[in-house]
Image 1: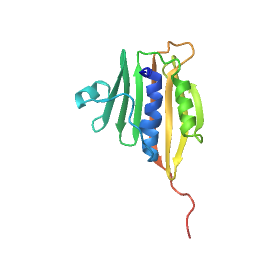
Image 2: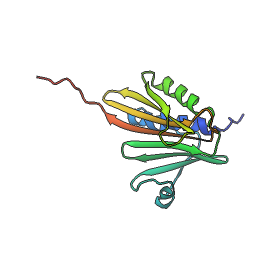
Image 3: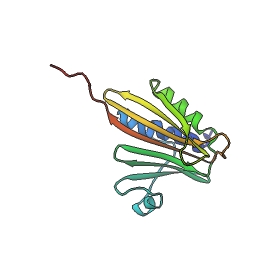
Image 4: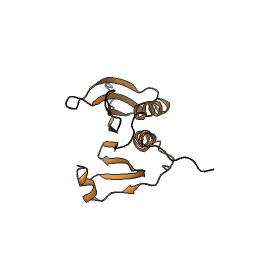
Length: 162
């Protein structure tokens, strides 16, 4: 029996956790259930992506989900698709894989009344961590998009050895 295709929201959650956080933590494992298409530099430029990164498109009808890697930053997004479950699915996947993740804030977007922002600190083990910023539709907005930015960083030991 064929498995049902992933929704945009499910794929975005999977890409954030397995495609970004697990890679930063050094524990990436499985292939994604959908084959991605690497975009060339001209295609990346149309999305406002800076040179030097790598963007992969995962086709899901009617459009798809994107993941962009650029240095220590990763961005996952989709538009023009139902995102009503995106935040819930993302948080479920995050808490399952990284139970020590802490939500730091949830506030209106400063320039877009239809968007809210939520931030998390995610310890990844050892000296690795990430800040995860999520942009999701405000309650009164149409649920038609979702964006997550992940910034990886190394934690330093603040205790000095004598």
